[in-house]
Amino acid sequence: MFASIATTAALSLLAAGTVSAASDPLLIENVTLVSPELAQPLGNRHVLIRDGRIAVVSATPIAAPPDTRRLDGAGKFLTPGLTDAHVHVSDAIGLTPNDPSLAQLEQDFFEQQPRSYLYFGVTQVLDTANRPDRVALFAAQPQHPDIHRCGVAPVVDGYPLVFIDKTLRHEIFKDWIFEPANANAHPLPQGANAADHTPEAVVARIAASGALCVKIALEDGFGEQTDWPIMSAATLKRVRAAATKHGLKLLAHANALDMQRMAVAGNVDMVIHGIWNWNELAQAEGIPPAVDAHLRNVRDRKIGYQATLRVLPGVMDLLDPTLLDDPTFAKVVPPRLLAWYRTEAAQWFRKQIFPPDFDGAAHLARLRAADSRWATSEHGKRALRHLYELGQPLLLGSDTPSAPTYGNQPGYETLKEMRMMADIGIPLQAIFAAGTINNARSLGLERDYGTIERGKIANLVLLDANPLASVDAWTKIDKVILRGEPIERETLAAGR
Ligand SMILES: [Zn+2]
Image (cartoon, rainbow, N blue to C red; front, side, top):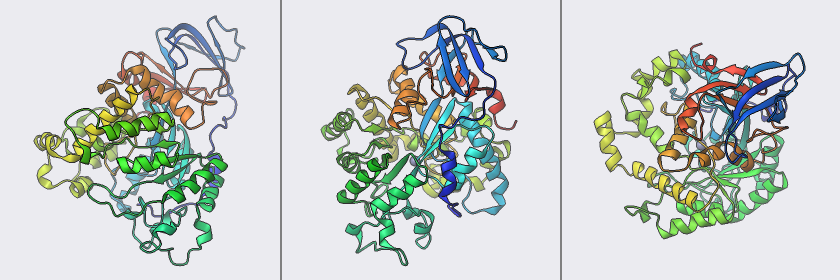
């Protein structure tokens, strides 16, 4: 799956915040602004964009220079573009690993992927674990969201290395940390130099690669498994200090109560999964006291929290025989790839994780009732709702794709994450803030993104419906404005 890794040096070229060559100014007239800094939408506004940034926002008409392009915003809503702060652009979704016969489908996927994000109004993404060459490929496409990335710092033999062949894992993820507390069972790999794999050395390399953040994983195993090695508190403390020194955010993968507690104790900036593994505390409804206490801690210490509600449903969706009939798939999946998803060969991941008798819609219903993975999803929803009620500013991250499941598609998954938030009663205003200003702030990018204010990068969305009235407004996008360049939504669809 991670066959070849290019040098990270090229990545400094990708540091977003640079604005492409100047083009003629763009004036959007008579539009209704919907933006998180506004208590309510403001009608009849005028927005002038110059050199890829917002130059003027005005309640009165703007006298623009003669070369200005004009866009009539009457009857339309202008919002900041969404940030999806948890994506993985390295994976050609659903393809069988290491199958050279699928190279064309892979190419189709990587050409369409950035456009699919834009198709749903996602104009910024944060890739939290990646192959630098694939991030570069994403940024090399003619139309793409601004992409920011974390460097991944796993411990020796820890998650996510556990899924990679033992002889290759420490070559593929080069920025691993040697954890002295695990040295007996997980010694320094042959030929490695311990000095290159201290928290300080690893974080310094990640900073030099142009990354915005360091991602660690506090994961001792999925399901019943609990024997994967994790970072000690002492090492986490050093990672925290090094990240602070280099101005990097520290993000932690953690979805179980004990693991999230370690993340909080280690003062990470953000946990990038919801807390859903608390089966041992399960109760029919409500929040167990221990989970409540933890979520209050998250709030009080101002730690960002991505719920990633779609992780488990996105896998379960593979059991839905009507999934690929959803007409939106044809908008975000290239035609040849969509045809391949319907083949027997494409069912490899489903067969790997579900017993064969769990196939089909009837079994899906049964599974929803009986399978603990589905129960954990319900826990995640309850926890998010509770955290919202505690007053935590929410974040938006879809974790696309969370696994090799074609149930997760770029951009569409971001919308589905917002829909799930709405379904559990999170107000649309809070969801909108999550995907705009809150995400920008949590990544230290609020000078560039998150509101419609002078000086910000002109990554905007022009919609025919108000996203504060319905999440489905994000399916009624007219144009996406990328660094001041308007793009008709339908030209971003797959197969065009
Ligand atoms: Zn992820």
